[in-house]
Amino acid sequence: MGCSRNCGLLTGAIIGAVLAVFGGALIPLGDYVVNRTIRKEDVIENGTIAYENWVVPGSPVYRQFWFYDVQNPLEVMNNGSRPILKQIGPYTYRMRYLPKENITQHPDNTVSYMLPNVARFEPDMSVGPENDTFTCINLAVVAAPALYQNSFIQILLNTWIKSSKSFMLQTRSVKEILWGYEDPFLKKVIFPVERTIGVFYPYNGTSDGQYRVFNGKDDISKTAIIQSYKNKRSTYGIFDSEQIVKEIPLYRFTVPRAAFASPLETPENKCFCTEEVHSKNCTTSGVLDISTCKEGKPVYISLPHFLYASEDVSKNIEGLSANKDEHETFLDIEPTTGFTLRFAKKLQINLLVTPAPKIDALSKLTRSYIFPILWLNETATIDDEKAAMFRSKVISPMKLLHLLQVVLIIVGCVMFLVFTVSYLICRLNKLSK
Image (cartoon, rainbow, N blue to C red; front, side):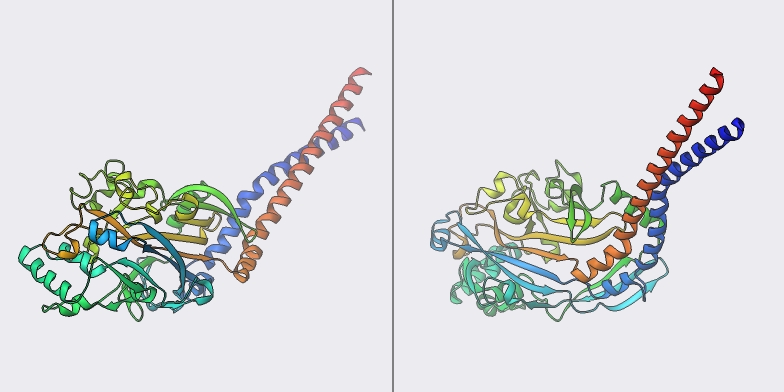
């Protein structure tokens, strides 16, 4: 009888230990089951949830613009004074709401497509109408000496600039600066040039060309990427914080300061240093020269308000106030799936202003400096319907598995302790007789 009882107690202890171990193994098992289910739907292939939300974004994508209005235009143009800027905005547009075109699957697990460009103004999300005007840099006049460095050509350009009554600064509407306007100076130029100019011209009704991306069928690469998110690592940025969006836990990754650092700090940025005069022998931080991508136009990109820029960049402008929380780019990623459920891509567009003695409109400048035009925030957040579906298919099963794991571990540990203690008491009683 005593032997049977001892055996029963040992059996109970073993069962408790097994339950505790099984409970501990539930999360990896749950991850596997959930990931297997998700992987069937996160492939960019006709018929999957990922495909439907990829062809046309399931949540609205907006691009907000803030413009820099010059408060002292006469002093800047006549005396070469530092510009005093005032930010106005946002002016908001709905983007990427047309389906992708010419979608083609390829044998190397990639898919190519054309992305039609279209922007629809959203007055309810803007501080004013598209025809609001502000004083800004004259895109054509400022770019002219960079595009035409020959002295004789610059003398001709000066003649056309003066006859068109153009200056270093101009007053334009939001719509004109963004999407294009016929420039009076360029209309005077006798050799072939594009007469219409704008920061994003041409845009509406065009396409950026053919894109090619991975379709998600490569399980090895996908697993490695998702695992890096779980470990709070990403090739796109650095881990910043944990976020909760619509009851969904997310990891926030931000663009690091090194992305805009000088080649001395980040050697990978060497290709963005195309000259040594304005960059002070490639030691300037915070701006990237993309003129080679813009047909020689002196365009520089930075974070808004010159966030992370070196003093030699920001000291030439008054009225800017960089703020990390407001001006940094981020991705909020759900670590189990690797899906981006919220993002904010922030960027500032600038032009390099350079003195040009042969061009009257630029002859009063005393130095070269980078002049901000506008900054933008392209952003999207998972909508309520998609968030509810995500919670039911991903978050709820994981929570249930976590709860079951805790219950099994607690029950198993209690059983193990109770039966083990009971067994030891029985053994001690038997030995004392």
